[in-house]
Amino acid sequence: MSNDTNTPPDDAPIVDINDQIAQRLDNLAAWRGEGTDPYGAIFPDRTLSVDAKALYNEDDPEAEPSVTVAGRIVLFRVMGKAVFAQLRDGAGLIQVYAQKNVLGDELFAAFKRLDFGDIVGVTGGVFKTRTGEITAKVQSYTLLSKALRPLPAKHEGLVDVEQRYRQRYLDLIGNDEAAAVFRKRIDIVREVRSFLEDRGYLEVETPMLQVVAGGAAARPFETYYNALSCPMFMRIAPELYLKRLLVGGFEKVFELNRNFRNEGLDRRHNPEFTMLELYEAYGDCRTMMELVEALITTVAQNVNGSLQVRLNEETTLDFTPPFRRVAYRDLVCERMGNDWYDVSGAERLGRAQALDLEVDAGMSDVAVTHEIYEKVIEHELIQPTFVTRLPRHLVPLAKTCDDDDTLVDVYELEINGLEISPGYSELNDPVEQRKRFQEQIDTADGNPEVSKIIDEDFLTALEHGMPPAGGLGLGIDRLVMLLTAAESIRDVILFPHLRPKK
Image (tube, rainbow, N blue to C red; front, side, top):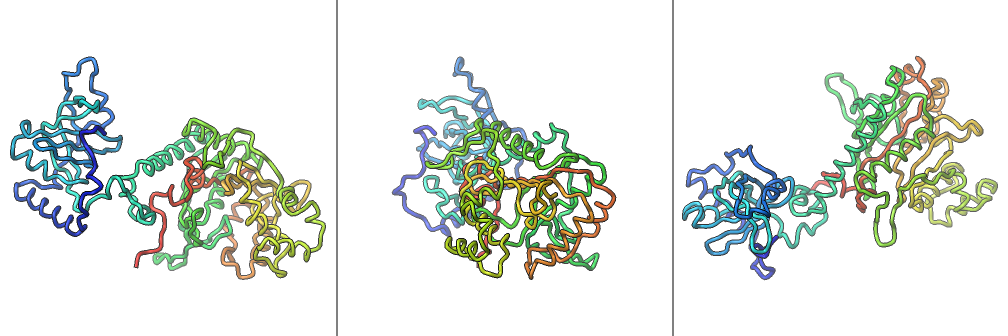
C-alpha cells in the first residue's frame, strides 16, 4: 500500500458496533433511495487484480490501459476531492483512485458513502502513483454488495482465537497468513491426487453411512435411517469397503475421504477429519513405506520448494529420504531398558507408574507397554520415523510377521510426535480375520471404541478371495499441519468443530 492510503489512525474514536451498523443501514437506505439496489448487480467481465496490475506498461506510462476489477474494500481513505481505496479479490489487492472532477458531484458523493467491507466493481485506466503503486483510476463503479457489519480493524485483526475459528470468513479476509495456509492445503491435496494418479491409482468413493462401523477402533457417531428403519453409523474408516474393491479386481485404489470419530477435541484431533486411504494388490508393508515416503517428499518439494520445514526456533523437520526405520520393541527398550521384556509384569507396571502414567494391575503387559509408547515414546519421535513390527493385538486387520506371530507386519509413520500414516501388509485370510474380529470383541471389556458387530458382508467378500495387498492411511489435516508449521489442527481446517455458543 502506498502512503496515499492508510488505515484509520490508532487514536481514532471507538464507535459502538451497533452505531456502526445503524450508520450502514442509513447508507443502505440512501443507495436505495437513489434507485440503486446494493445487491442487485452482477459483474462477470472482470480482471483479477494481479492481471490488471500486469497491464501497466513501464515503457509507456501515459497509456493507462482500461481495466475492470472487483473486490472487497479493505482500506478506504477520503482526501478532500479524492478517495483512495484498496480492493481485495481472490488473487490479491489493487488500489483504486476516485476523483470528484472525474465522477462528478453526485457519483463522487455516493462513492464517499461506501464503507469498509463493501464489495464494488470499478472500471478505469491503470497508472502508477508518485509512491510507485499501480492503481486503477475510477471512471465508473458499481456497488455489488453492501456490508452491514464492519470488518475487524486492519491493524488489530481477529485477536480472539476462538472467533477466528467461529468466523473463519473474517479470518480469511483480514489475515493473509491464514488465507495462505488454506491455499497451501488446496495445493497439497492436489499434489497428493496427482502423485497417485500418475502411478495408476483409481480414485473411488465409498459409503459414509455404514451399517457396521469398521476398519478402525474408534467410537462412531450414531444415527438412524428412517427409510430402512435401522441404525446407521458415520464411518470411522473406509478400509473394509476399499478392500471389497480389491476383491472385485480394482487393484490400485485410493479415497480422499471424510472420517468421523465421536472422540475428544484438542490441538491434534477434530471429530471430522480428512484421510487418504489406499490399497495396492500384490503389495505389502514395505511397498507402502516406499510409497508414502515418496509421496510426502514429493508433495513437500512441490508445494514448499524444500524438504525442510522450520516449525519453530528449536525444530526443523527434514523430509530427506530415507526415513528412519525402527522396530516398536527396540524403541521401547531404548526408553525403558533393554530388559523390559524380560522382567516381571509387576516390575513393568512399577516402571510405567514412575512415569506418572495411568496404568494398573488389571491391564495386560501389551496394554501397559503401549501406554508408554503412546504417552511417552511417540511424542519424542520428531524427525520422520517408521515404527515397525507392532504387537498383533493392536492391529487386527494386518498380517503377522513371518518370524513372529505375536507381531504384525505394519508401520506407523511418526513425525513431530504425531502418527501421520499407518500402513499394513493386509490380512487376506478370511478364517484368521474372523478369529481376530472375535478376539477383539472378547477382549473389548466394554470399550465403546470396539464394534461388537462382525461385518459379515466384508468376510463374505474375503471368502471369495482377496489378493495379497498393502494398504495405508495418511492424515491430510496432520500432513498440512507439518508442511505449514501450524500448531493446531484447527488452523488447517476451514471450519473446525467447537462447542456451540450458549
